[in-house]
Length: 253
Ligand code: PEP
Image (cartoon, rainbow, N blue to C red; front, side):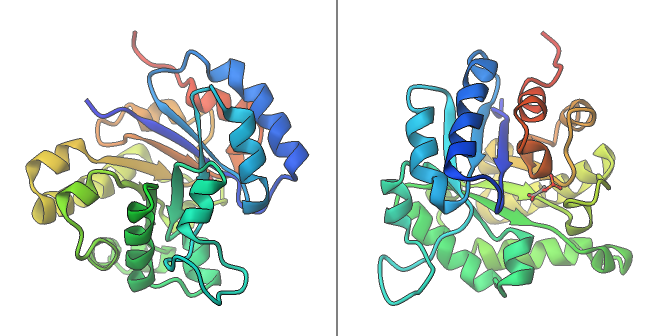
């Protein structure tokens, strides 16, 4: 059994006060949500305050990016140890907005994954095709390239700490969700890549999240797919009501 993960990516939203208020309101609403791991991803500035506010709860804190070096002359960057120091247990790596806006490459994703793992952080690694790539029939080719480039040189012990997020770029922030079947097809393909590189055991254990316009009204049908092990949520993670409704999606008792 793979324990689902519901993770919120707050992107460049929320001041420290807004972030802390969110967590205070979220805590009681997810206190009994033992069916899944709950993760929130505030901007760097609010990490410490959110980690303090979440202390003693079942809410884990994720950063949205990191640098692979331990320290150095990297203006504007944040190191893995700094994230741990700020109370993070997770870090999002390779989000399509980083790939598009900041020239993130698969080689950099790979360096970041290794640095995150070395610091004890659980990487949430995003992969996914653009609309043009899907329409050109290149979805699998893109996923294979991102997978092989991002996960090269990892041992099975490394890989078992990674969470994959399949995020078709055309579904992010557009209100256009992949159908559950479409998502499951890509998840199956990704799980096949895990099997090829790391073996059956890890393939069956790996948690693969779906991301792209996940909302309270579509989470149930997405989670009904055996291949889908949770969600990485952008817009709908910014409101306590919608995020807690996604965490507490209807499920068979
Ligand atoms: C995301 O940013 O990872 C995301 C999936 O955003 P949204 O849910 O808004 O599509």
